[in-house]
Amino acid sequence: MQTRRLGNSDLHITPVGYGAWAVGGSGWQFGWGSQDDNDSIAAIHRSLELGVNWIDTAAVYGLGHSEEVVARALKGWSGPRPYVFTKCGLRWDTTGKVSKVLSAESIRREVEDSLRRLSVDVIDLYQIHWPPEPDSAALEEGWSTLTNLKHEGKVRWIGVSNFNVLQLRRAQAIAPVTSLQPRYSLVHREIENEILPYCQGEGIGVIVYSPMASGLLTGAMTRERAARLPTDDWRSADPDFMEPDLSHNLALVDRLQEIANRRNCSVGEVAIAWTLHHFAVTGAIVGARNARQAEGVMPAGELRLTEEEVTEIESFSAEKAA
Image (cartoon, rainbow, N blue to C red; front, side, top):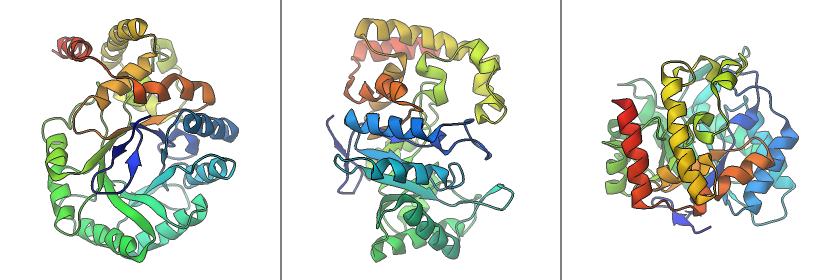
């Protein structure tokens, strides 16, 4: 795969990266249900074999378990070392309850824990996972701490996730933001009007998460499967997987399937390629829970949709949303 420079960094990333959210497994607030670690490792290895050169995880995924699985996968990988991105700012207590904490003391504990779990000496990209409540000075304290960690060599580059433009400006006033990680897909296009143009103008790299809308736009989700999602899968309570939104989303999949059939690729690849078509998007975070899934979606990094195909997709999306 070709690579793209991520923001102001020296990181040149492939258009798709491996997303390790689901590999954290169940047993926490935003889990995806049970997950076999060997399947996760096989998915990571297959993604790397297909050319992916970065992995995105977070301390909170599986309450530390995702980072540990990534470390196991990398220990058993003999090819070129991928970049490893992780996140901080979501802490959990002994009961597993997750809270936003951006104090300097907390973040410093988190980075040491992540370095240990990942078995690395330095984290390639360290990101604030979620901003604090509006008007909270914790944003400045947290971002200043990441800046200090960069100067100390604990992390190479620093970014944020789920920030709006105002929050990005507040961070930029302290130190440059290398990247933003927002949600973006055909189902969720909220960042198009303000956030993506701002990032483009400021030279902030954008790595989008959930480009397949958390599995809705893979072609594998059906009305029956959505109804059977286990209670330990956060999607079971998400409106995107319930009526009336579900019917709209599945109708969108039908239209994407037409393009996928013409291009001899998967629906998921088309959905991912659509996000990568936006001028401000540097890369897309793509999850896979086994090697077979990885084979069906990671080639999206080499799929280029035509302007006619993009227009076809967006016209249908707008028609169904009206």
